Image (cartoon, rainbow, N blue to C red; front, side, top):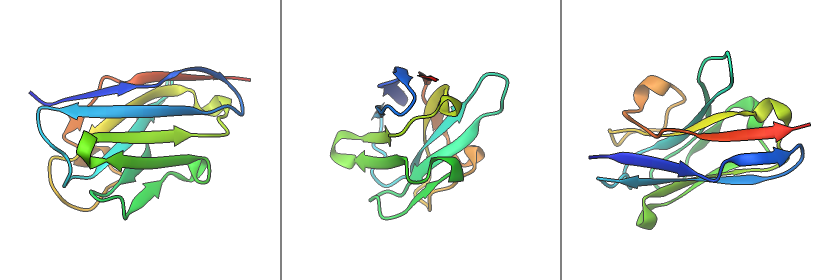
Length: 125
């Protein structure tokens, strides 16, 4: 059974930092793109960042460019999201996702086959 388990969320003041982790179990994703999405209250789930299998390709949504960094450790089957200079508008549940196919990373949620349960990030002003 494949599971993605996120951790690292919490409450932080604006301008602060958090590092999210997502550990995969049940299969290896070393050849697969992985990504982060988020969903704020009353809004649809949106793309945040994605990374190719060896980390050579990364994409970010415009609102987080220069502040967030996605990375991965394939030996640990883990993907990370370092979030700096956090803003209240970053408040959301953050979800880790993994593509079941070994292709290029995508900004589209429908390309991802496996999802974590989410971790809450709350940024106070």
